[in-house]
Image (tube, rainbow, N blue to C red):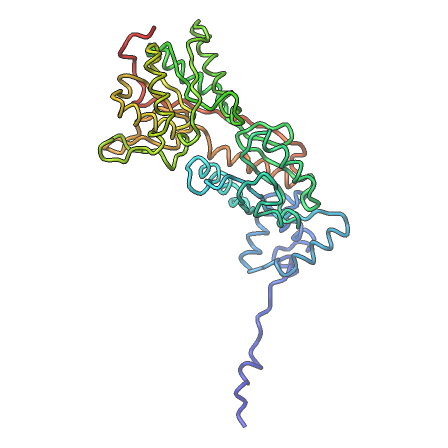
Length: 391
């Protein structure tokens, strides 16, 4: 009788590559290879990279042994390095260029160094975030946030109370925080540059269209206000040469902002039809000495540009206009960005944050640290000398 199962029963099964196989190929002790694959800092970075590359080439998969290794380490009080960073961001992270550039910097550095990123949407209770179960299981080595300290502090306390997370590193993106590491940008000096440039053009009175002094978001604007005051002081001008108009929140939404200068061919901004638009126009008419407008972000500048155009004013003939972030351009018919702005080093902030977190996770640095990166004023066609006398 012909055995139709002969081939199946006699075929050689595939043998999985083991840690011992990798160690033998590397010519190193099994314990050294194990440490290198776990990212242990006791193995030189160049050696660890070579071991990981060879293990990947051989097809070594540590996943089947992961839980057993974790249990063994926990018995000896050793925390397993997962090479995973958690990120909690607003839902707009995938759509708004501002958040996407921060995310880009994080992803580029983490993936280049064999780390992974797990992203979840921000919530005021960490137990309601999509990555809470990963924190509770100890699968996340560090957390990164984009939130000011007064909102982030309760979340830090909640994360510290999770047994699976405990005292692991936390990173604050763009907001200084005494309870975490942080990477921030020098917004004060960049705004000082912008106002100095406008002063050199002949402007003397400035309108800051910004968040309300009494709002929870005021921390976003305070460093920028300081830059304006410093620049005025440099020029010997009193503080009453800058004016503040609180900004309606929807005017800062980049997904609502028009990005083209040709008003006739592009839809009117939905934000530019609300009550706040009347307030802005009325404010400018009552204060003819104002010739330059500085905004909270680029989206607000784009909305204001369209509103002023619809009102009969022109940029930069009647007002010079400056955005903030350099993420949302105002295109002319040739595709040239016309909006002067302050360029935030968003990708660089993400990369530096990743670098610090990796070093904290691997034990290369022991304490939290704050790094400040430079921001830069970018003059473009939306700023020019004032065409009418500034009082």
